[in-house]
Amino acid sequence: MSLPQIAIIGRPNVGKSSLLNRLVRRRVSIVDPTPGVTRDRVSVLLELEAPRDREGEDPKYAELVDTGGYGVYTAEGKRFDDAGVDLAALTEDIEAQINIAREQADVLLFVIDAQAGVTALDETIARMLREGGDLDKLLMVANKVDGESWIAHGLEAAGLGFGEPIVVSASNGYGARQLEETLYERVELAGSGTEAPEAPEMRVAIVGKRNAGKSTLINTLAGEPRVVVSEIAGTTRDSIDVRFEIDGRTLVAIDTAGARRRKSLADDVEYYAYHRMLRAIRRADVVVLLVDATDEVSQVDQKLTQELQRQFKPTVIVVNKCDRLAETNIGPEDYLQYLTEQLRGLDYAPIVFISAEEGDGVSDMVAMAFNLHRQAGHREATGSLNRVVEEILKKRGPSSRLGTQARLFYVSQVDVNPPTIVLKVNHPKLFTGQYERYLMNRLREELPYSEVPIRLVFSERDRMEVNEMKQRGRSRDFE
Image (cartoon, rainbow, N blue to C red; front, side):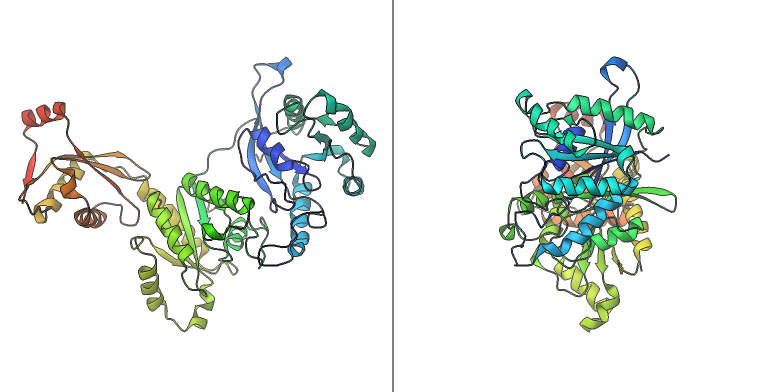
C-alpha cells in the first residue's frame, strides 16, 4: 500500500522548506531567502508520533513533499543567474511540479508568512485552491509565529476562508507539536500509513557536471516527469530522492545538483547544493558518474572521480547522449580509451553507454549497478582470503632497498561496502605505494571484487598477536 502524501504549498519565502526540515527533524531541503531555491518536488518519509492523549499507539507514516513557490520569479529576488539567463523561463515547469503534488496529495498544507501578513499572491493561491476543489484536504498553516506575540498576526490567515490556521514557527519549533498531531489524525483518516515502507534494495546517486542529463535520466527511471528538466545550467538545487521499482526490485535514485568548480559557485545556494551532492554520494550504495558524450571530459569530471575514489564508492561510468557520439567523429573503442586516460583511478569501473532521453541502455545501467552492489557486499572467507594473498606474495612480494624482509602474519576481511581487508604485517611501509597498487589489481583478478574499490589496511600486530602467532607458527616470509 502506498503512503499518504502531504504536500506543502505557498508563495516564495514563507518557509516551506524550513517547515519540511522541522517536521522530519533533519536538513533535507535547502533553506535560503532567495526566491526560487526549491524547484522540484522534494519528498521524504515522515514519521508521526501519536498525539499526547493517545500515547502508546503506533506511529503513522506519510510522504512529505516540499514544492517550489507559486509566482516564484515574479517576486522580488534573484531572477537572473550568474550567466545572465532569465530564470523566469523555469516558472512554468516549477508550477507544473507543484500542481502534480497538489493532485497526488492526501493533505495540502497551505503556508503563509504570519509576519508579512496575507499578500495578494496568497489570495491568488487561495482562489486557485477553491476553484481546484482542494478544500477537503486543505490545512491552513501560518508560519513564522515565533512566539505568543505573533499569534494574532497568524490568525489573520483565517480571512482567506479556510478556517483557523495552525500557527507554527519552523525556525524555533513553536506550535510544531500541534501540527504533527493534526497531521497524524489526517493520515489516520486516509486509512493507510500504518507501516513504514521497506528499505530499498539499493540507493543510486547520479552525479556529473551541469547539463550532463541527470534529471532526464531520473525522469526516465521514474517513468514520469519527476524533476524539472531544462537547458538552463544549474536547474537542480536540492538532492532529490526518487523511489521506483524496476523488474520487481525497489530502488531509490538520487538526483543531484550539477557539479562545478568550487571557486565558480555563485552563491550560498550553490554552496549548499554542492555539499548535498557530496552527502548524496556518502549515503549511496552505488554512484552513477554521468558523462556527456558530446562534451570533453572536464576538470569537474576529474574532481568527481577523485571524490568517488576517496569515498570508496562503487561507480558505473555512464556515457549519456551516446546516440550523438557519431557527431564527435570518435569511435566507441577510441572513446573508451579516452575515458580511461581522462578518468584516472577508475580504470576498474564498468562503462555503460546510454541515451537518457530515448531510454536506450538504461536497463543495462541498472543491472550493472545491482552487480556492483552485490560485489561490494560480498564477504570472502578468511581461509580463502589468506590463501589468495599468500599466493600473490609468493609470486611477487614487496622489496626493500635495505634488505628488510616482508612478513605477512594473516589477512582478514573486516567489513563490506567497501570490502575492507586488513593485512597484519611486520613493516606496513613495505606494502604501501606501488606495491599496494599491484596487490589491489591482483586481488581484483582473484576475488569477486573486479569492478569495485577495495580498502586495504596494512597494520602491525600487537604484542598479544605476536604471542599467538608464535604459538601457531602462522607467519610467512617473502623475498
